[in-house]
Image (tube, rainbow, N blue to C red; front, top):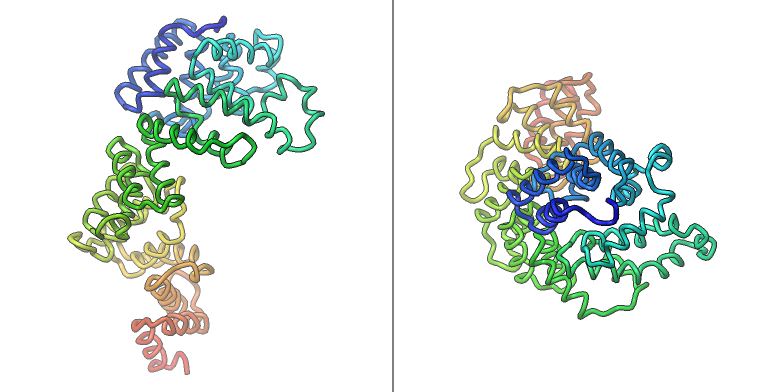
Length: 416
């Protein structure tokens, strides 16, 4: 604001976006709240970023996502004269016509130039923001006439990526890691001069700062360098610093014996921590461990059903299908839950047309459950023929239970 962040905002931004420590991040947040209450428009912008989800702030900080309130704060910040608020409002979809008319800047360019001046004076977060302006194409709002020079997005990127890269690298030297994902995309695009040694050095440097980048470096070692042991070491380091994805990845390594001797009990420990932290795939894995009783984990259908339910309802995962499959079995057979054929069939409907995407033995278990539901009208209208088809499909996959059910239906004269 007015060309320079206040000292409380500078300190708060450093704590929130470079410490990756929950207590330090909360301390920075309190500083922003105090500054915001005194009318600091930049503080309002950064408060808004804290509540815009993990794309804007490390999830380990524990800030609740509140898109509506964040939008109001971001717009208010821009209207009160925060140049950073203007740039961030554009990036977050909050630069509405009313904000553009009401902000105390003659244009987006004027706000950009204020942030640029701070970037040139060495403010790392502003360097990151200027990198974003070029990377995302917002620079065309600064110089609209340039749009006529570029025939397509690639032509623009060829112009903008080298500039964005320069500012991102400057922000990295100031310990701001937020632009790393965009920087990697620039590097992979081939539209900016490549320097593998420089790229690798920044990757390692930022992995020491950010648990997110630390996990990313583990994935890089695993998938691009085939260094399984190195990958695991970075997953564990990131996990110890609270990164949930890395915690899950470490569990997978122990589960699969990747880079380490297979140890399902150690895998479960990592899965459980990640599950509690809200990682959907980890929640499913914990449910799976309890359902079958792996390693020293004793079979517990109630716990299995609980974790399958968590994974099924998790909006940040892709575990709906496999979770529904196991929940259908739990409710149809009363495993860990009160037997309820209606609920069971509601889950069976989720997977009915996708059983080919399941694996052995749950695919056969689901087909058997569908056969039973249709054959006896449990949770749905009775359809003997459809029941027989599903039971036969399950039997072909080797389900002895399905074979027994088919035999019983024949004995009772329901089918030939």
